[in-house]
Image (tube, rainbow, N blue to C red; front, top):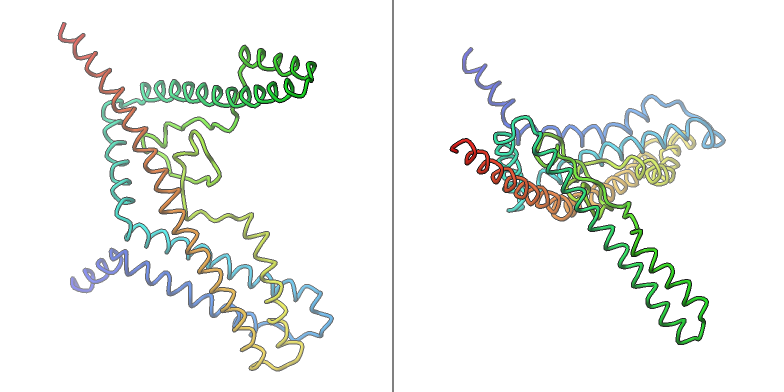
Length: 302
């Protein structure tokens, strides 16, 4: 009895085995979905291709693609973590630094103040960059208009430059850093197109883009839906179901390959970059917290 219990415990504690079982189960489900659809679907005529039945065929394929996409992203992310030499150490550093920050600053007040000040400095920096870039463009226009002998346009550009020197532009692309991510008490998300601020430390390559799937998958599924409708229209189940499965497997293969490559790329690039940014910010925060700790200890000794 004890051996059986131990065997059960070993089974459920074997993460790699459970992941393989999960993946195998998903593959089996993907292969069985069309059979279930074929088995319970009533035969209909050619006109029914444009009715609810055709839509249900598309829904079946879309669901299969969504399922394959989610599982592929998980597998790709987990495998990339195993083969990349930097990702796991970076995650470990984030956990260690987060624990160190929380030990020094138990209530998080100093960390919040530091983060707010850092965000202000970063916003100011990006505002200055944006303003200076705009001034550079206007100065080039001044030169061009001067050469073209257009004094009114020259004067207008010079007024714009003077105004920008007093009232800087605001870079709205900067998203303030979230202290939760820096001290590692929040899940890491992702935003691929971000360039500045909090987006620099948000990453989750496994995230499923529902907008992309909803817009793209039905288009892919529409053509396959026609194939899945043929068995009921022509009553040639074996041949047409075989044709359907060729298209089905091809669609799944393309989906799995593209999602795997995309997720692996995001994991080794944007996700790794986000982790490095978190470690960098944690280092700055720890440096500031340690300085404060030294000052406090000196005051106590006095």
